[in-house]
Length: 253
Ligand SMILES: C[S@@+](CC[C@H](N)C(=O)[O-])C[C@H]1O[C@@H](n2cnc3c(N)ncnc32)[C@H](O)[C@@H]1O
Image: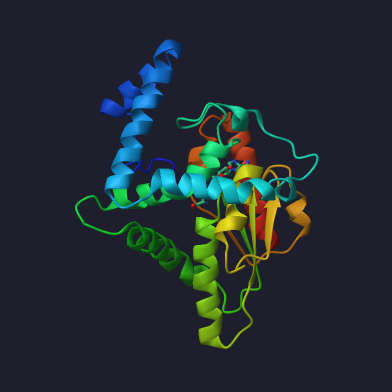
């Protein structure tokens, strides 16, 4: 993507009202009540639009809790930017609340892309992922064996990739690919395991994209969807380094 490309209208907080909101939440005393109000609004809007936010949060958290230990790897180094407040979560992505609300938030994001249309959450999600896959398709070779989804979160992108690539392989009469989802949040990965009821994903890996030993592995396709927004707190150097890691991985393929 070009550096000068403007943020889409639904995601831009660098001007207008978004910029003022950014400034206000920078004030510590105002942050808590603002976050509370913002969360209530987001949850109410999502539920009005057919996303059972709170019900799903309880369900996912309860089912994922026993899977936390197996979703955590020893010795994972957390970059400083990752431990900072992110969205309305004081602990960023490293908490149950963020993990148990990620699927709902992803659906809400998809719905916001087409505000003028009355889509069901799943319809909007599929439309969004299909659009991403359509852009990638011309870049892929016929046979895809190993796929890595970096910053997989609770696996919405990973599962959409799996369904698309499995279908693609079936149509060509080829072996289905092996998919790995990688994320820094063990809570997110525990929820991903719950959502992956059909065991479409071969491995859920707890690792930092910057520090992983992936360069020694071979992947035919590395996907990175909606992750750059998570790195906004990162110093530019770290971001560049990350991109270099990702690029060098692609070169390794
Ligand atoms: C908005 S979510 C993206 C979700 C998913 N790719 C999708 O499209 O639905 C961003 C994810 O990136 C992860 N992440 C951010 N920095 C990371 C890093 N350095 N290494 C691994 N994962 C990271 C976060 O934990 C979070 O789950």
